[in-house]
View (cartoon, rainbow, N blue to C red):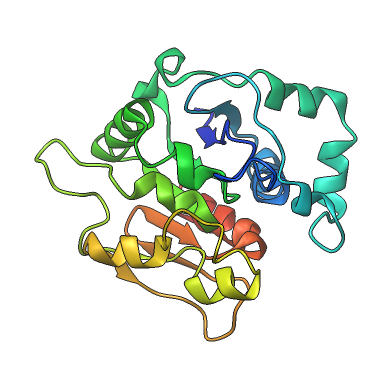
Amino acid sequence: MTRRILHVVTNVGHYQDPSHRTGLWLSELAHAWEVFEAQGYQQEIVSPAGGPSPLEPRSLKFPNCDRTAKAWRSDPQRMALLENTARPDQIDPSDLDAIYFTGGHAVMYDFPDSAGLQGITRQIWEQGGIVSSVCHGYCGLLNTRLSDGSLLVAGRRVTGFAWQEEVLARVDKLVPYNAEEEMKKRGALYEKAKLPFVSYAISDGRLVTGQNPGSAKETAQEVVALL
């Protein structure tokens, strides 16, 4: 049977201050998509509200926009996928094998409290599927509870964009909260690489997380290994 992967992207295009733009970090989607495509997996894209997913401007500049991201950006069919993302209520999780939350600072606003995304994630997890995220995508796991009321991340090893990386990226004054700290408050066993911005991904059973944009490929490869 063909494996089915659901990618999650943001609908948000700016920080609280509208003059500071943000959005999907394109390489985090493009790298994982390429890894899953090579396996012949069926892939689809959902967002909290459905419809367009704006791109983070900084993700389109060198060195962040590498060969894979540039190829996506220059492909009208691929870009159309980001103009017409599905709503959570249009997704049937019953035959999904994995969910993959992409990042970009925008997801800090619309991922954590999306009941639709939480429902999909919970069903995938409880039917034995894989839950994964990269970079700020782990914000989508902050408030997801299982049917017994427990937080999915509680007591599990997790990584994601570190506060040190926020400071180095000079966005620590722009972000709405400290995602690393919020994850720890929920009982997650947060880890990070010794050096910022290097690829780092971990698996705790069927929970796979990657630390930063450079971790997307490694995160996707971890998902493939589990599948």
